[in-house]
Length: 400
Ligand code: PLP
Image 1 (spheres, helix red, strand yellow):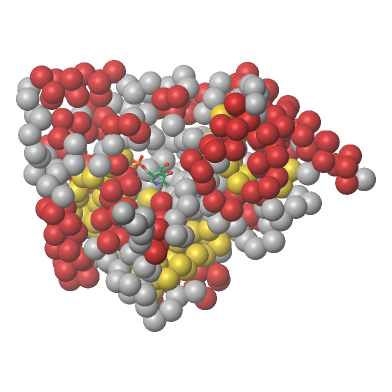
Image 2 (cartoon, rainbow, N blue to C red):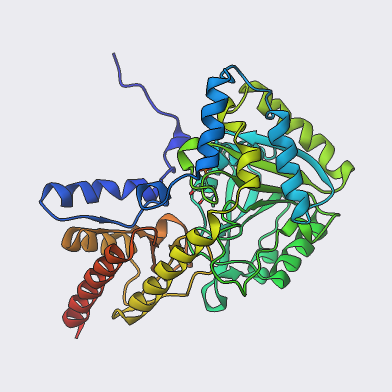
């Protein structure tokens, strides 16, 4: 039999967060002690899914909620999601639906919207699933830059300049992965203005919205600032509720009725075609949204880990790091190189510290970064950053 030929569209798909593990596995096989700062999974460290969520899931399983659910989600979950969005000031809400993780919500939102050759403005740096789905849908890549010199806020001039005749939407990731930045109100108003001017849907990924680490920085849902713009706001259990393996996310569609009606119907075609998302876990959504007691301690631990990250990385030779305001990622800049892939591979081989090259998330040409996940406990982080600093000091010596 001849080799089965994969589709051309798979060629451009990379997922740097996991691709880097090949290098890490080699270093491990060579006997290095490894420190993994590459995957945004809180449950690998000292974070647990809150007990009330676990109880609700076990109850649903025992109550035999193990058949298919309605395609968009069980009514109690949808009601809780709508109420939560309403409490955040999002209106007018036109729809809510549940998917297998935020990932499936993103997939359905994009697949229901854009045809081959269309484009969607996508933040750079940003979460790589968006570009992977865009590749699958054969969309034209259309990244807009976040401005490192302005706390990684979206560069509104760049965004406006890139709107073309086939642009269909603006993706906003707020708080952002990989930079941990939170959009200021003025930036959000600027994005809404561009969306309004060009009749664009806004897809606002707010999956980290309850993990803002500075009390002085409010998280503002973009959909709460405009009733006249169509917005899908994305949330889920993975991050705020410490359950990425539960695979539950949701979308809330808001905006004018006439602007959202046809798109809403298209979303439901895809939702029906895949039957339903995980049924028993959906029954824990109302419980999750009513039990936010775990958050203060999670944020407190993360804020301490963030402070260590920023302080130690900024003290390392050849590295500068904008302080993240939310989530559990930082995106430090590597100076004196434009090849973060090669430098990160060297770092992993020499120190066993696993981070992800910035090119996996997008960055301005000519700059180099890497992403660290600061979920591990403080001792692990300190050890990792000492190793990174030593590695960079070695490079500086070679350069001089
Ligand atoms: N959106 C962002 C910005 C993410 O960082 C992630 C996961 O890391 C997701 C969506 C995917 O979420 P889920 O695990 O719910 O599919």
